[in-house]
Amino acid sequence: MSSPGVERPDLPEFMTWEELEQLPEDIAGQIELWNGRVVWRRRRPAEHQAFLFALTSALKRCARDGMAEQPQSWWRVDFETNVFFGESNKSDFATPDVLVYRRLDAPYQDIRAQDVLLVSRVHSPSSIEIDPFDAQRRYADAGVPWYWEVTLARRKSAVAMVRAYALETTPGKLPPGVQPLHPANYLLTGEWSPNNSDAITIDFPFPIHIPWSDLEF
Picture 1: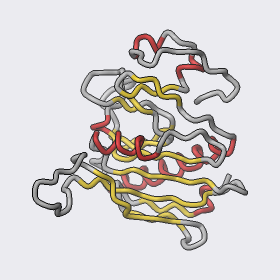
Picture 2: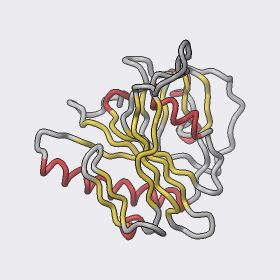
Picture 3: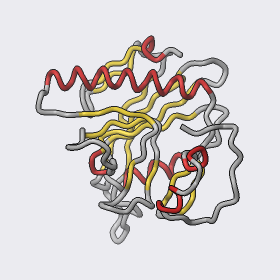
């Protein structure tokens, strides 16, 4: 969890995971490594953290209910946890606000993108944002099936909109000789607002039903 009061030091443009580990935790916690490039994560107001706790708790409840119906399934829900891209490299990772992943065989293992089912980014009005398309692209290229984008209201402590994107790996029909720049993209498949729905309801990656009252903060 990043600390808003910590001043950013002057760091090199590129670092390794081993070099990042040598930094103070308050500094390292504000950084993602994109193929070794240092990317500062946005600062977070108190409302942002309160919503993360509420959303994580709601998704955990849905995951437990889903596992009760499907005992062979093992899911975990966490927040602000590193997701590493590739099989072994640790100098390429992102830290989604909330993530759902397959429960690993042993504790204290790194979470790799191939084990992740859903990631969520939360956009706060006062945050310094990473370009959302850049962030989304990384997870699409890594094959993460679901991406949620959450927008908090500007003038009150509430959720304004939740959007769910599903991974599309088969490009649409293109003119002869034209190839997509990226092999996978996210398509908007769900959109919910307190103004037009009673709850967030979707069946993937497991049955999810979250009344807006569960996300009040």
